Amino acid sequence: MSSSSFASHAAWSSGHGPKDSGITKLIVGGESFAEESRKYLDEVWGGIPSYNTYGSTEGTMCGECTQRNGLHVPEDLVHLDIYDPKLSSFVPDGTSGRIVLTTLLPPEGGARAGICLSITTLMM
Image (cartoon, rainbow, N blue to C red):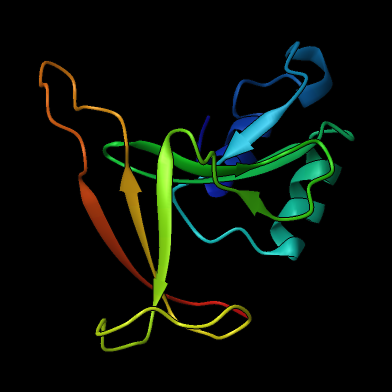
């Protein structure tokens, strides 16, 4: 797993082509991953598929499946709420808002769960 910009750099930095690496999938995260970036990585890595993820220091919060058609939240590991931009109430389905992700796993060495992340992202 790496950022898309590092994967772009790593494609040629070893002096060998990406097809010689033995890598069969790229899982990227840590920065914005626009469709143009995906097309570029797919091209540079010789058709090896790239998958987007989103996470934090607590772990991966969501990722793409093999259809590469958007991020999925694993509901058994992460709770997702969408609030109005002022975080005063939930928004109805189909409405833009602020995503709040809460991991349901305890941190390493701890017995408590429920670390809350606030992400300023508008849903389309």
